[in-house]
Length: 328
Image (tube, rainbow, N blue to C red; front, side, top):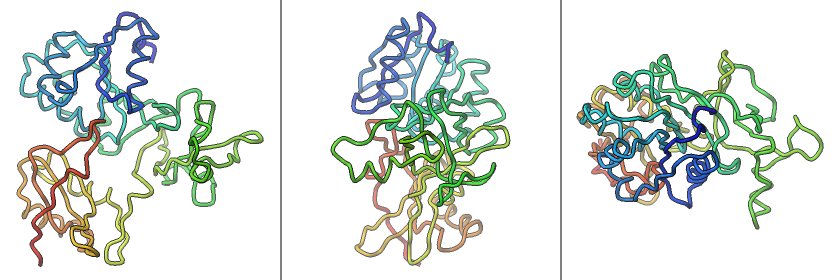
């Protein structure tokens, strides 16, 4: 990250002070002689206005959640002449899983710079925990590459018996090292279930159970697979939302996709897909019935202009509208 921390860089501060991402934005700039640009909330929420501000302020270092950057990417594609005036050196992603395939348009129109850096992180390690530069070959995949741990942390990919799993096998990620928090203040019960004894360190060493499913690649790089707790149970079937999301996201005409389990009527839990783009929702369900088992096909697919985001730039699941179910 030496290039990102060079003197004279212009950093944006786009995130809420209640979101740990802001710690990186503020102190990354100020501790290394950079200029910190506080972006007004109204501008953060307008991809067009943010795009224009990046040009007028000649911003070099931008931190974004993937959801927010996809919207910025669309604004950039609509204003290519303005986009060529960008002076971005680096874009850092964090806060949620990155879908590299969706960066292909941006990387075609902005070859070379900015560098695209994916930094997986958790609040319990104070912002970022790993580093991975996104390269051209990565955009062929929708798997989020999260790279290698930062120097002050160690990663362990373990099975249910806390045994390290082989390369290529999915396990749960545990994080140890000097960057780890001591626990949750006033929550000894929660701390004891998340901060557990580390069998790979010295006496008294702890590691944090992230709840994230990952696998090591043969290249020594970590890939994010999904959440251990993203499984839902509907009518007795265990369903991995990530698998349904992947099928929905790969449909022709789909730009962004989200899948949640809704319980709009008590006791009647159903899968619902939300998409942006030109896809027809009825046709989307028809194609999904050919690609997924019947119990994994969403009960409804809803087309939206944009997916709603929280103030932290993550998908706002509570703002997703209830669909009009067509009971079959």
